[in-house]
Image (spheres, rainbow, N blue to C red):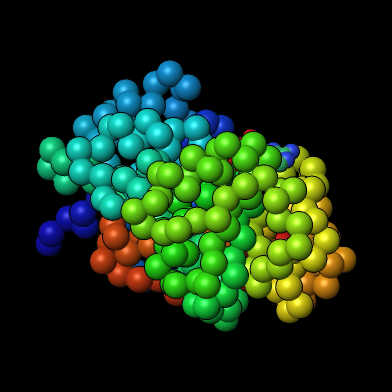
Length: 278
Ligand code: NAP
């Protein structure tokens, strides 16, 4: 009789990491698809990311999800960064095969899949506004641009950072960039809050009228209920609001499919993790 083989090992690595939903999500995916795998959470010391990754690899680890603050260091460590990771300059998933370290970034694709498949809002021909110019926005620009919106604008507290994105992504998309004050008189069909204000409960100085009638307002932060951004959107008449729980689960599903070659059903996991927007 042959011995059952040990489960393949995966983990999420970050600092801090105790809050991470990834072990729960991947555990549910593995159960639903019958994959023999183990998925844990690893807190690496702030100055020890690469040492911890190499030790995990040496012990037979097959892949990692990478979260704050290591997404840039993961890019540096990769031998084979795939296109989404190169464009974002950041990595949220690693795959180890022999001496190669493949790296990808599924955050932007997870966001687009959530908006289009789960929320049923097509981005084609729409006026889309990304608030924020950090890592999440960098990862979202090309996946959104590929859906052919009529306009993709990026507004940020420090307008210079938004203008830098216009230059960095010029080969892929003609971004409209500026500060929040530059949005006066404009309206958008899809408004995404990719700033970290959902965590700090700060409001964005968005001019009245930024939300078109029937707009989708999407807060990338998840599990915080009605954030100031979502309240602003509701008050301005946005009829469709969502937080980033679907994005989280969809990016996890992309990583799972990349590692295991099996696509899990995301709906039951999203339903399980959803915190009502009240
Ligand atoms: P980041 O790189 O640290 O960027 C933070 C952004 O927030 C910057 O544009 C910053 O503007 C802006 N900001 C911070 N405080 C602000 C304030 N008081 N007023 C206006 N703007 C402010 O963060 P990130 O990685 O892009 O992540 C952004 C958010 O997305 C995070 O909160 C994260 O939780 C969420 N996220 C969710 C998922 C998901 O799966 N649902 C995935 C990735 C990220 P300045 O440039 O002016 O400082």
